[in-house]
Image 1: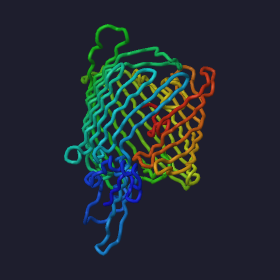
Image 2: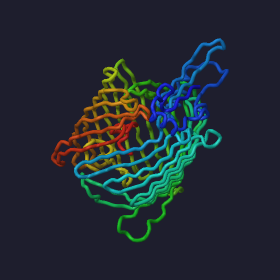
Image 3: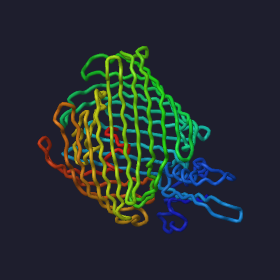
Image 4: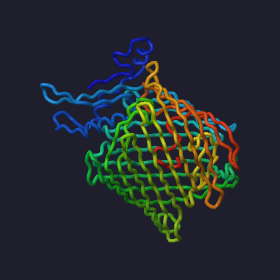
Length: 495
């Protein structure tokens, strides 16, 4: 096993690089070994080696991972090489459009003491509220298998807490996984219509969810799996209109149900999709998940009901690129008819025209029926067209399309960062069924900056975007400093 610090043996030539190496705790051997799916004396399996590489990259603490084999007098030897990334990461994100400002300042440690544990603090200011978030994630805390995740957010208008204890599937061939969650919220829910800057409705929400689930593999191997599982939850969710006196009555419900998941694994390694010049694992697997929640009247619901749900993804690859399709939906049925429903569909395709030239196209659409307050589609100043104002497009119907051309100027400048430029066009919007469709076209140019010494591959976006005027919206400019893409990687149009 070969472990490198942030600057390798042949790279730490100056005082600054040596100081960075001293300040950083190199990832522990035990942290690396627990992600390997092979052991000394076992038959050679190339699929397990490839999946072990993906497991190590998925930790998000390495800038480079390589597992290869050597023929020696003693036989076949597997060599594991890892190079750490700078895991103490300040983060700053900024968006300004039409006089509205949203910014985030954060400090995250993604490899605490070399254990691949994460801890951090974040301050976020939006036109609606300000908040301070603390989070801690310690994978494999108990017996090298069970992990803990904690998150607390103190908002100017509420509080949120989330906790999870879980044992995930560590490999495609893993036989068992479980999780237990606690989610508590006291928050203000703002509802916006027709691009208005002020909320038309304000509700106070009290929410508690206690959930648990377990899953078992029926058939599993390096090529995929068939799993079944069961989920259960107890939930309280109450709303009180702003200005109303007293407290909302406590309404508790319970639901449970089984699900089935099938996957045929397929991965490719690409460079420059989310970052600049970095190797990334791209999941093009075909995955189908189907399940149903059973919500009986005896568990607190007004009527006996069932809620089937579905999600699926499949990917493809050609000589010049790759892409994937995402589908998901759910439906709540009771004796009274359809209570609520939602559906999402998205497609993403990437063309690698040459080693430094990329074109990315994304399209997504969604529809909802009777969404919960605050769960409506909300595009603008965060998700969707880049120059949009906060809550510019809200409703139960939405779509978003984006096309971007990138050119990677350099994979590494001053041994620190990759640099690229981009041009883009966004078109999307949201509206309520029965009302006028609201959408806009936004276009602009930007820089793509990706640290070559960071474990993360996502590039920082510095975009200057122009919002084209429509009958209902004024044109304008926006400066956006963000990370990754302006769309969700799972294709959904909500958070």
